[in-house]
Amino acid sequence: MRGTVLTWGHKTTLGEIIVEMIDMVKERGLREGWGNIHQGKEEAISYLSSLGVKEVEEKEGIVFPRDPSLLGSLIISGDKIYPVIHNPYRGLCFIESE
Image (cartoon, rainbow, N blue to C red):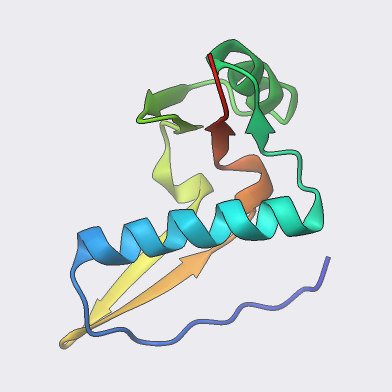
């Protein structure tokens, strides 16, 4: 644990910032060995369940908590969006193949 939170404002759309956040979590998870890449939907669901996340959804090869507050927040101030991601290792699972 690093015990820090970093964020900065982006002039972009919500859709673009969400895609960027997803890509960042996947890349960092691979680099740091978070174990968030799974072989199939059931394996991803089982992994999140073992971490206490029981209600999940799946969309486009990603399994994530139904409660978005488990992932983080997007703060909108003026024309900028400030992403805050916390606990990404228990929030997003990527399905490599089914």
